[in-house]
Image 1: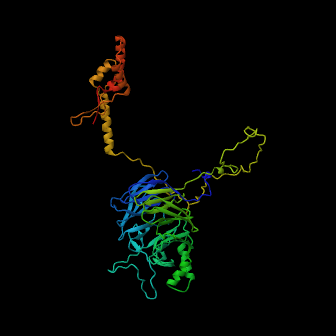
Image 2 (image 1 turned 90 degrees about the horizontal axis):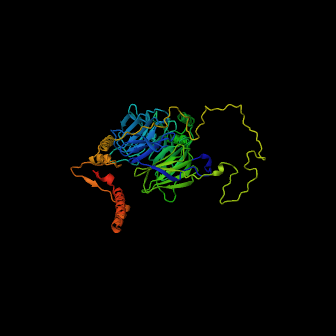
Image 3 (image 1 turned 120 degrees about the vertical axis):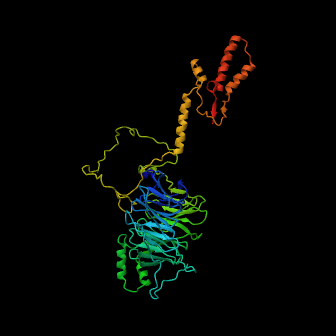
Length: 551
């Protein structure tokens, strides 16, 4: 789509389903940093990488040890690595370009989500959120894990607060928690089952700040915007909240330590809450006040101006779009299939959603062209109008033309080396960044290829081998081909013959011959020979003396 003819007054969000992708049963999706590649985890344990520009499959990552469904996929900063978590409690790190498995680690619990450290091009640390235990930092190079705290201990009594979801048999409590790194990975933000946001230094494994969420409901999702300025939480009270990140994007941990030093009293939880009030500030709340529905897979747009979330109702594929001010601007209604996962393209106004059946739907903008962008005096007409042209309007050198002086400095040097920064980019470009994968042609299936070769050789043999009839016909000077049919094969001693049906013209000539006997014997023989020739041509005498046979 040409950018100059797009109406600038239109909302920059998707509106219609443009296309869908199908490959097995896909469960989760993730874009790389530039949006050129889309990774999708499948139910058979494979991870398929789509070239989003051509909408074709660029690579399929398959581990023989993993046959369980994929629960999450995550790209590294420059796109050279992909981290895949599966329902068999495994974490697998892949080399995207080579298609080789780097390492595989099996945890004690099923990881519902896993995120690579965003501060490194080749990260060795990841953040995993298991199903029924606290989030943990996993060292992929050594396999060691470090469980993060999910609640602030009561300093006065020296004990940790009891969980709401403890089992009676003494097993570990079910603590549904969500966690994510900040933009550069020096802090981890954890949302726990008590409705609290904990800011944790994962290196020292200490809670630095606490932000209570109104309603104290379980936090199901927590995610940062692409630019790191906003934090989104999805709670069990059916409300999505947006927080403004008050810490600097770089060196956030150092700024947090300085804030702690500036607060002398009180100590304990109250001090953490005071520090937390200087880390995050509530910006907006989103909810459907009528239906009071739960939300699924909420996230930001690439530029952080829009917030989207899917309906968690069964049999509904609805996507709600809000602007950052809190106004609902669009509801996208898809097929009658439940929605599983959502992702917004990092650069373009495109949404990708995953349905329960495993299809991936691509939502794009329905553009309307604004042709007045070509010229400021362009006027779009609703109906035809009569136009009277001037006498010199189409002359080569018009009398009314005025020579305008150019304000361009021709002596100024033009910079053709510097590259303009992408408006949606969250950091500078890197030469090491992997944006596209080389196309690898798929070889033919050996069985089909063997059959094709065998059939072609059989065709050649049968075309070169002529019957005695054909040789006799060639000797008599007839221009007919009596070669045996290439489809002729012997199937267990039985032969099926195919005879061509006479044409309508041949039938008419036969009927006319029977109906109207000719008077003159000479003329009769002449017409007879002609009609017989036509009949023979229509019945395929020249080609069907040796009939075609099917297998």
